[in-house]
Amino acid sequence: MTIGEKYSKIREDVPEHVTIVAAVKTRTANEVAQVIDAGVTDIGENYVQEAETLHNELGDAAKSIQWHMIGHLQTNKINKALELFNVIQTIDSLKKADAVNRRAAERGKVVPVYIEVNIGSELTKSGFSPEYVLIEDLINEMAGMEFLRVKGLMTMGPVTGDPEEIRPYFRKTRQIFDRLCTLHLPHIDMKTLSMGMSHSYKVAIEEGSTMVRLGTVLFGTRIYQ
Ligand SMILES: *Cc1c(COP(=O)(O)O)cnc(C)c1O
Image (tube, rainbow, N blue to C red; front, top):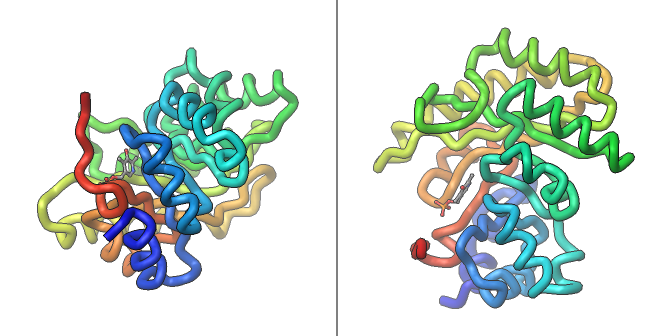
């Protein structure tokens, strides 16, 4: 199957209310163009530099889609990221939220952001601590940040061979998300629960994900150089 055919098949199987983000780290502009031609509307990229190269190589095709920052965002790359991305999914601390808000204010541009939750409390992963009260505190602070719109939660979940082992973590993220959805605060508009990757997206959707981020199932195994 071609990349486009793989996307079309997965799109048919995934419920309509679930957004598919094509996770394109390490992929060529040609590969990314193929998923865009097949109908992908959202692209996720981990690296600011790669996103810039893709924007340049894809030209007009890059402008027709939503770009999501899904990698760890370094403070010194925030300005560039705000040029290239429509959504920042990886707000992992109050400090990061504040830094993005300040840069967005300088540009006079409101930025949609998601809070990244480290649902497995893994030392090797970034993301906010998965305790509801702490996340609510963070959101209360972010409600005062005029140039951010908090629109979702994002999680990676622990990497295991068996997606069933990730199910409880997805469920816990969903529970946090549902509680946050009941808050009524300025600048907070919780809509999207971004969880599920190639090996886990089916389980994630069963647990209430509204956005899956897919790389390997679309493009094949990644080769890092
Ligand atoms: C790479 C990546 C994905 C996609 O991973 P696959 O297993 O290739 O589907 C999704 N989300 C994030 C944050 C990633 O870094």
